[in-house]
Image (cartoon, rainbow, N blue to C red; front, side):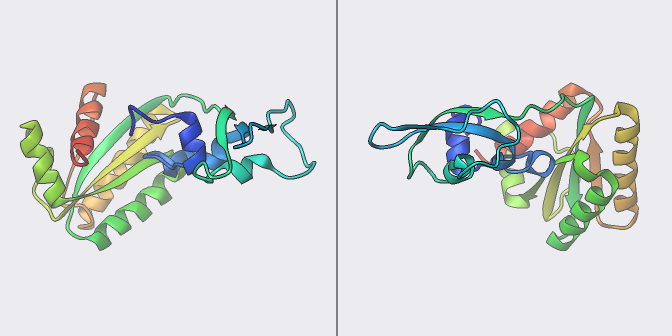
Length: 198
């Protein structure tokens, strides 16, 4: 839905997206909404004040309502600083339990800098490889994980990410791993993941 998503649709569905680990559900991004009800009434919570404890919170009412209460026509959203750097790792994992352990280990090591963690089943991965006619980035495994880092301090944070992945490999949580070394490799890993859902 990346090419067809709208802000109003994201508000109505309270979408999380692939970077929910870093930025939270869409609800956490909404500062105000304007919505039109079925009878044409326009309701708004678009105010200049960050703190407002007067009356009902229209934002919370419309976020996740799936359009049943009205159509969101305007929204005010939080902005986040652009990461200093981003990278991704494609990991082969031997089991679902190992994938959960990897998620836990990366969350401890990286905290909120872990921006995405996508579990991919072997069948979907093999289909994506065949469809894209590309080389496999890691050895065969029952499951794969694409983990992404949004770094605040480029070199330091990427080193911490690499060390956490190396530790997971040494402990058998990850059987093979490829860490993107360039924007091109980063894009290629994400393209492979995207192909898994096509």
